[in-house]
Image 1 (tube, rainbow, N blue to C red):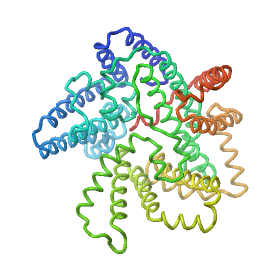
Image 2: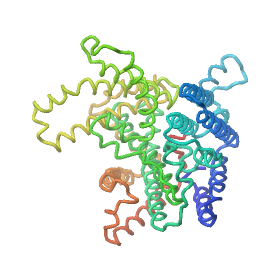
Image 3: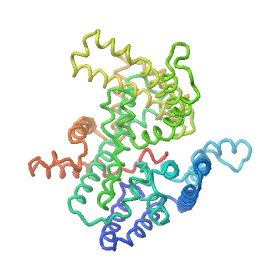
Image 4: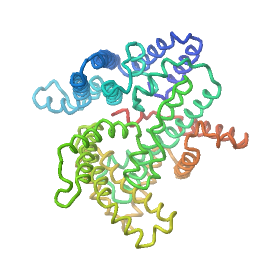
Length: 503
């Protein structure tokens, strides 16, 4: 069930009304039933996998908690993690398995969309990571085991966060299930605002850019540098508006029901380094990777590297380089089994390792050139460089495969002559017209992007910052009406799913 569908809005209004009329002790039943109905709209078989994952991790959590010794707790936790990863591997990488099988058995067809939908349950990557964090936090005794299977099932399947996150830690979400949420008109209003903001980003920005990006990237051999650069820049904003828009809708829906979900984005394209970018982009995944892969791996290696330096390089640098490389290669693999995703993760590993090794030379360069004395210019330069590095990485993420990624990169520097530029401009005009947009409409959408960045930077949290409520009443209500008007105008024929559904 798409957040952008009328079905979802009717479903959510129905759930909300009943939720606040039910006594607190019965609300978990409604939330669980509603979440399962929400998930059933994908395919019934998906719900069987979700239910199996709930039962598996509920009993593993109890097993970890009841283990007497720390060694036993660790062994059971590892067993549980392996089982979750096996479940993820079998379903998440089904496309590749069918591709291999199809070479030997004629009844199997690689890339069959029906087979793929049945085999790969929506959101399995997100709720698998949620399960792993649950088992690890129980083993670390950071959270008590949840013995109420209904509450645990709600924690895992809560419909606003089920398919695309955010990835909630048990200590943050589970206690909220036991809190009695009274109807709070202010929180409900804040939730509606946040949902409205998410719909605006998805329907008005992301969906309008997607057609242009798809037209260029799906026919990459017909285009040269200018069009590929434009499509790559547009994709950077498409995926941000698409994913963050979903999270805003999810957080707004949860807020209306009295729940608080973690922020997943914090104006990431204003980051001054790639390292900072990963503290502001897909925040709950970044924190998950840090706490459950990077830090344990770095700690493990630190106990085995006894020297202070190796080949003149400090052990600390080695530890960081190895741990961050493994972490981001696994991050790429989490997004997909294709070599392009592994290259995408590896590219970020290279960015971060080089950034770590060149901290002192960079500071010395900025100091010697005097740029550091001009703080605004210094920050702008860092933001631009970081954004360009991120956009380059998006090529590998968006392209169909590694070969396509390499072809696109090889064409980025071609076709910049006057004649080629004219051809590219005409081709772009044709693409825009084919998408049902006018140049004026696209220009208006592009102008809105820095406006969104400005609002999110200055108000940080659009739905709850008091600064917004200090604006005059006509300005506030004018903003609401404008957002609704734009959503209806640009989203009148939107049928695009969210990009991260595939993960």
